[in-house]
Image (cartoon, rainbow, N blue to C red; front, side, top):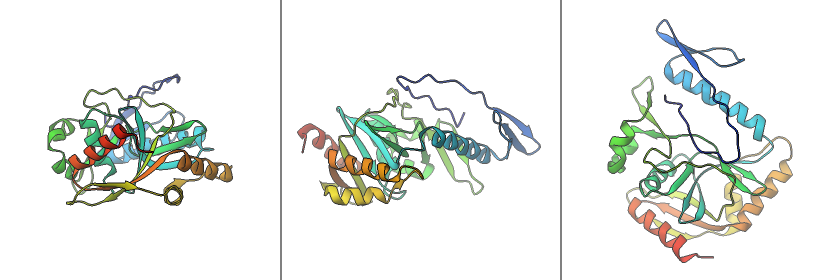
Length: 252
């Protein structure tokens, strides 16, 4: 249940894979097709599946650069949100879902010749994040979750959990927004130089072992083709307001 992921992927034929998990004493055993079984706690099993999905993903898309970024479509504009694990990226994505914007993902973004495509991964939401998302808290707590050895809970939240269709497709990116935490303060949106955007993205990039020059060139093109911004993320209502104004005014 915790690994249930059902995005709509236009143009791709998907083959369902049944994962059989059986009890093995006080632990569990998962048999992946054609692979060695994984044994351990539910968290260990989930990690093994994610690891194998990552291996398959690299085998198919390993020639492309991968950016650590979330993506969402806001009033027809596709925005990539770039930030490390402390920038509040997932929390902002959840707030966008609450506003019924089309969120594609919050983890990995493949940079392609015609734009970018998000990885089909649920948002991983910590129990502590629900304090700033009171309107979503009950629905998130009804979703599948894992509890680690010290009792920390992480929920698996598909972007469709509020009823908005979750669609992942290769599309151009219109805006690049670099997130910086300003917790407890205001949310401020300001311009960001394209040259600085390219250098910042290089810090969050997984570069393939083959075709490195082509990968960097694609990243450079992305920075040149997009409008680039810095969002100091504090008050979430203010952040949503800034983003609405950005797409409605069409800043160039």
